[in-house]
Amino acid sequence: MTNIIIVLIALYTLITVFHVAHEAPKNILISEHHSRPEWDRNFALYEALTELGWLSGLALGVILSAYGFSGTSLILLCSSLNLAALITSLFLVEDPLLIFERRLVTIERICDFAHRGLSVASKALDGSPIREKMESENVSIFCAGLLLFSLGSSMLFTPLPVFFSKNLGLPESIVFGIFMFNTFGSFLGYVLAGERGRQLNGKAIVKRANLVRAVLALLLISTAIWFSSFTLTLAVIALLGMGIAYGFLLISALSLSMELIPEGKAGLFNALIGLGGALGCLLGTYTAENYGFPTLFLVASIGFFLSYVGFKTYTK
Image (cartoon, rainbow, N blue to C red; front, side, top):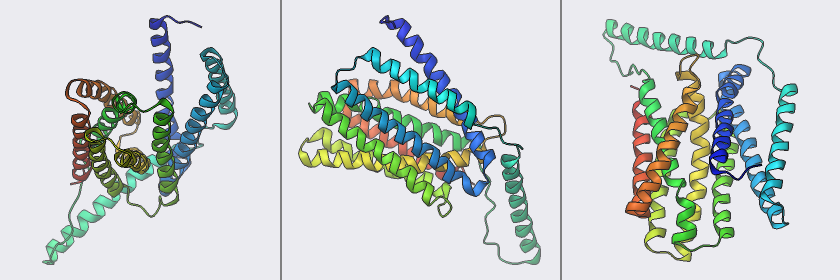
C-alpha cells in the first residue's frame, strides 16, 4: 500500500489501461460466437450484467464503509474480486472455433449493396421510375458521431457531482442516490435493448438516443438557474432518461461498429470513446469553472445534437 500521489496515479493509469485492453477482444468474442441478429441481445446481456455488478459494488462499498471498513480493506477486497474474475475467465472464456462471422456480415453488406445497385440500374434501363436511393456508409462520419457522443457525455457527467454537492449544497447521500438513478437507467436501457434487439433499427436508435440526451441535458439548466424540489425532481428524471438512452445507444453503436470498422481495428470503437471521454473531462471542468454550469449543460447538449447529426448523415 502507498499514499504517494504519483504512485497512486501510475497505478490507476495501469489499471485503466488493462481495463480498456479487454474491451476490443470482448467485443470480437461476442461477435464471433453469435450471428448478426443476436449481436444486440448478447452485447446488451453483457453490459447489463456489468452494470449490475457496478451497482452491487457501489452498494457494497457504501455498506462496508458504514460498518467502518477502511480504504485499505476495500482495496484488498477489490483485488480479491479481480483475482476471482481472472481465475473464472481461465475456465469459462473460450475462443470461437472459427473466425468468420464478421467477415460474413461484411460480405452480406457488399452483396446487398451490389444487388440494390443492379436493381436501380435495371429500372433505369427499362425506363421505370426510380424511387430507391443508393446509400453508402461513411465510417469517418460514424466515428465522428461516436467521438462527439463520448465527449458530450464526459463533459456533462465529470463535473456533475460538484454541481449537486457544492452548487446545490446537497449531502453526499443524496448525490449518491441521484447517480444511482442514472446507473439504474443504464441497466434498464441494456435490458430493454436486449429484449427488443431484433425489432429495433440500430441506425435509428443512435440518432434518437442522442437527440433525447440533448433535450434532457437542457432540462438540467432549470436546476442551475432556479433550484427547488420540482427542478431537482426534473434533474433526477433527466438523469434516469439519459441512462436509458445511453443503454440503447451504446448497444446499437457497438453492433454497428462491428459491422463498419474494418477487421483488425475493432479497438477503434473504444479508442474513440476513451478520447472523447478525456477531452470531455478537460472541457467539462474548464467550462464549469469559468463559465458556469448552465453554459456547461448547454454546450453538452450541443455536443449530443452534433453527434445526432453525425449519426444521421453517415449513411448517404
